[in-house]
Image (cartoon, rainbow, N blue to C red; front, side, top):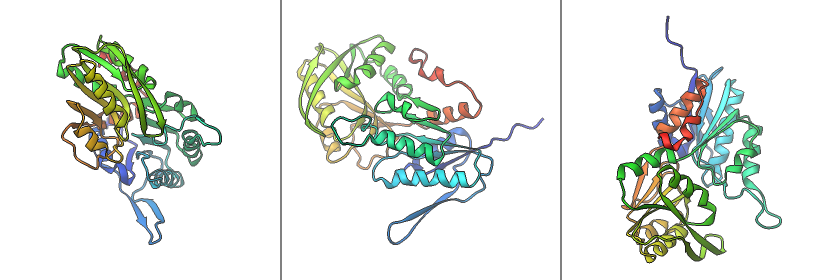
Length: 316
């Protein structure tokens, strides 16, 4: 009896092409052919260059700024629907606008909800993403959401370091749950940094809640944007008597002079993933790939197998 022929096609938007190729390789296929045609006024058109009728189409694209990246994803979804794809699955390694998940002041948009509505309306059947800024964003979608965690990648790496006197930390109170989950998985303690912002992307004051004296500290967070919060937290931790401090952050936005701040920081190492391409090289930054994780989830989705085992950190 011949082996069952795969019905999976993996494609990519332009900003995530480097990652999509690795995902396709780990899945055991080649990246599908698609092109983007640009017009002189900045308008563009997406096109699949192979037959996808009746296929399960996985489209890989992080929705980082500019907004063209998100719009390009929407256009690819629309094109796949009009080309009679059987199922359309958006693989969004970094879900942009995730920080706008609620009204933090009057008369503002909840952009995360708006983008979820757009993706659903255009025609996705499923979403696969990694480390959403807020877990409740899953509820903005009316299709299944596979919300993965970078801990599947980070925890084995942390274990390989075999760091003595290890303790985890959150750079702000919003990340307490994340730090606590790592601490539980590796049987360590954790501390919290209390942050007060004077305005967006500007850190006013950070205070440490907990003892880090003579400890090797790992700060965990979902994103590094300007690096202001996490580098200031690292300074406060070292001032508290820590022996060393590292950072494990999923999405390396690294806007402005973030790389310079990291270079000049007391960090021994900063671990990130490849959900966002890094524009500027920094010796302190180590990039771990998410390709194997996404490929495994695509296989399980295609074969209708559970992915719940991927959330059990004690078995990773």
